[in-house]
Image (cartoon, rainbow over all chains, first blue to last red; front, side):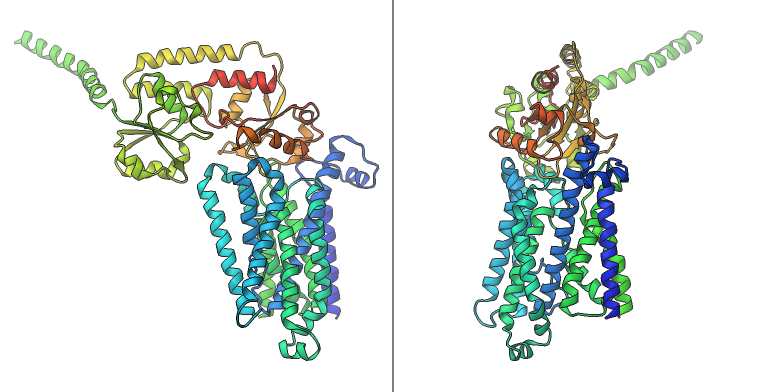
Length: 327
Length: 291
């Protein structure tokens, strides 16, 4: 118990530091005192105020929301499927979202404002197809069927994405940042469009915490306790799909976070209880993405780099260190 | 004997002096390539202006309207990464030389492996365009015409850059997407904007590619007077793309957005060099910079 509390506290400190860094640092130097004044509504006005209020603040909030969403999606999928390699990629969401976004960028550049909608639609479509196939025929909803159907969908949509990029290579640079994963300074508009999907996904995930703990005891034990294992898996898949598709709509294809963060918090906290893992994954994911995004924005400022590689650079050493200790 | 030796020495000297000229003439006479494929609009149009018809031209970004009407019956080769043209299609044209782009690095190597001579003519600077015009002329044995062409180009560019009244701050973007790249001073579009009198917004960034993803914070801080986007889109997409760019929160407060000076250019003359340099500069000045 004490260990879990200290891990939680450490994660909260990491999140606080990442948030402060995200608001205080950027391509343009804004004195920290000005940043505080601006956030308290006493800003000096001018470009500095706009940079903090219209660019950094929404981006920081997006990083936290997306990081939390992907962390939770990975945690509940791993719990529902009982597979440590489960992540939003496994249910095809990432592949579908990628295809939807690239379709808009490449074929309908005049409708670029629909990019988040395209990513969301195809991400959810991919997950829906996975569930339809996995819940049809024999062994309905079995872990193996879900994972195999997810891999098939991922391959299908990835092939579609690759085909589009190959057919229109001169438009590929516009797609690179989405594929590599990254946040943009697009204000509040995207969050305003996508927040209902995050909200439903977060609520679903909260409601699934106890059922997932029962499922961890085995399907038979869970059933004897009054749970319905297949229904829990389906609900977890839907929640993860909503969170992952919404995340991809905003931040592109960030594949590392949902897989690794839940494992990091499990190893650090020494517990697989979803009462601990789900919220800890949310906080850990938020801290990791906010920190990585700050690095991506500032390391070669004013050039912005995609955030995906920086998440890996920050997360992998910690993951390997914990893995070594755990083994 | 002495006279004979003197005569022999004189003859040897004459032969030594004359030999390079003779062999050079022989080389230029024999080695002027007959079958040329031009993969860039600059190379293709330069050949057309010199009165040389290539056996193949590369498909240009934004369609074939940038090519000279003299080339309308020439075989068009679709281009794609990483080789550029399909090598089988190219080989079927039996080219002696291919005037290519640095974009097709892998393809250029493959063409050379096929025994085809490859020369890269895709200028990113106007000065380089002059030089490459002359070199293409030299290649096809039309030095005199190339010099005349060069002279006319220089004159028209000088005229196009006269009387610049103002130097607005310009941000030039490649692509639209959610993360457009900024074109830098070592890109063709950047060179044109600078020649047209614009102060190109680059954040002090250098990049070999000529493009960089620059932070929106810098855009807000630098406050460009004009934003020009060069997406790969159609003319019909211009209104919706302009609205989309205006709605970008990073740019809403800029002078460009406030004064309605966000433009979308779809003819790709800012992406790739052509021979219509003066016309491009004039268009940038009148349509975008208004100087």
